[in-house]
Length: 196
Figure 1 (cartoon, helix red, strand yellow):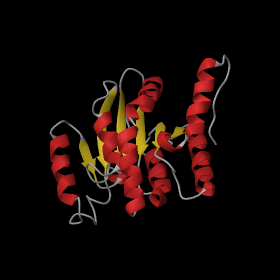
Figure 2 (cartoon, helix red, strand yellow):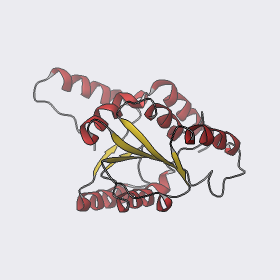
Figure 3 (cartoon, rainbow, N blue to C red):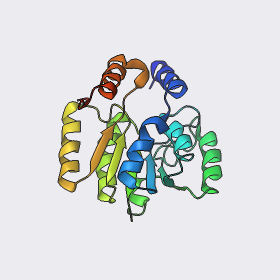
Figure 4 (cartoon, one colour):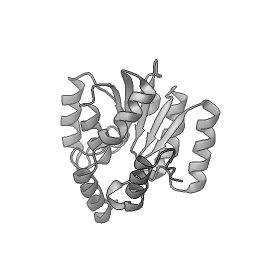
């Protein structure tokens, strides 16, 4: 996005730690270790996907299988940030992370796999369907997940038909009501929180 989007990402990077909410999910869904695919990395030190990647690489129960970056490995190869992305790619490939320009180029999932989709909002429904076609059983969608409620409903229908579990992120630093609801839930036996 524009300057507002960049400011929001900067705030999120300073205040949000993906491991706080992804670690329990991944342990529950993937077991002791599981494969993770990141779709939509973006520019190092600027993209939310990049920030998730840096933390995923530190998580002991994650096998970081692949990064799918359609922009910098496609039409954005000479765009601002491409040089930084390619330097990061070289560094992480040395650690065993594969990089692809599309989900179609990525091998199918062979075991418990979670895809973290942090692409552009308009592209996320397509990425979502492609991940399911590749056998991904768990999907974490970075907010807002899709450009409309209707698109999210279609994604839910697809996921339900394939038995895929889907989780949608939220920006903790701007949702006090979610923090308050979770605090209430933690101290109230039998309480659960559902965000719709």
